[in-house]
Length: 416
Image 1 (cartoon, rainbow, N blue to C red):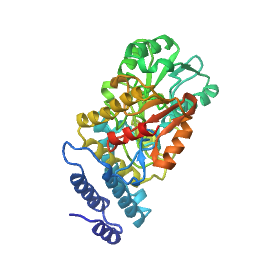
Image 2: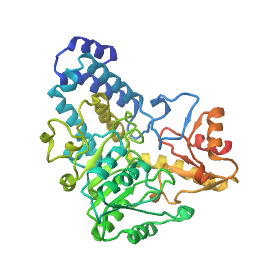
Image 3: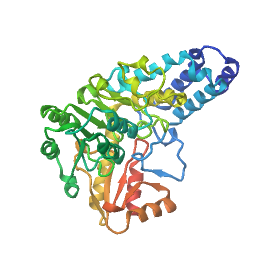
Image 4: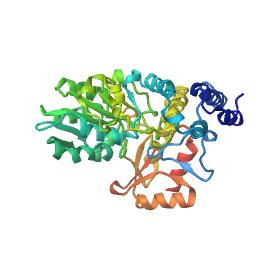
């Protein structure tokens, strides 16, 4: 079995050795560790992460937890790159290992490798669209008021400079728990106009946890002549399966540090070929013409964080190794328990959709007896429980992942 000591010894002696040969021990070690950590049909547990024993972490919707073995791979790649910084940044031998990561991401979301880019996060993708998509006078961009600010503010900022309009429609937050697919489609149908050129869909919003029926909304938008649909999957990729061909959207942005449990500051995005010529790159640099005719033209901005890019591949390996049915059953069981406890508790009200198909492992509870931020601060300081408060709606957002337990959910409600 490969060891970290063996790897570092090879790095020290490697110098200008083949990059591919120096990467092999890291990959082998990761594969061995993953095989020993997650057995077929099983899910990760707390031991697979680095969380403090004093912390009950229920805030994966803000920042996810990176598995220990992905952390280990990242540290190893960093040690390798620092052995000869120039060689491990600019050597042409990087092409193949990075392409392998593209292939892994592409398989995970049913895309082609040349449709995958590596941005910083979701916000970067929507800045790119707001600035670079061919929009002008008479064009409209449409999204609901629950759209994340990182996918909204860029359009408001650039609209006045480029001459297009931004239309924001209201989601009925007061009756969100009873909303259904037809209600959601009716909202989009009502607000799409002949001027609508781009519809932005928050796959699951971060405020109430509504899972938008993205496939059906896209089909509706196409039928009404909307040429472009962008999907924000920051709160879904890694939580639920994503199939870009089935969804038929043009752009997908995500933040890999959440549910994909990848390193912070690096992410993945999808660009359908039909939009390549419709978007001008936000980053302009030398040699960019080499990637014309692929989505890579949207990502190159000079010196890159190679260890993080390679580590995304291992984060994808980790997620892809999990049985999707077993995974969904676990997340849905935590969701069901929280919904039942919220209904039973005298001081709480369930404020997310009541059907799993329109919800997910990010849900919202209204608290009636205390200001949410005070509750959050108190439960963290006294009990180490982490979640997201929203004082404006008198709610707290709970977003458990696979290593969380029903006991942790029950304890939260006992302490409210």
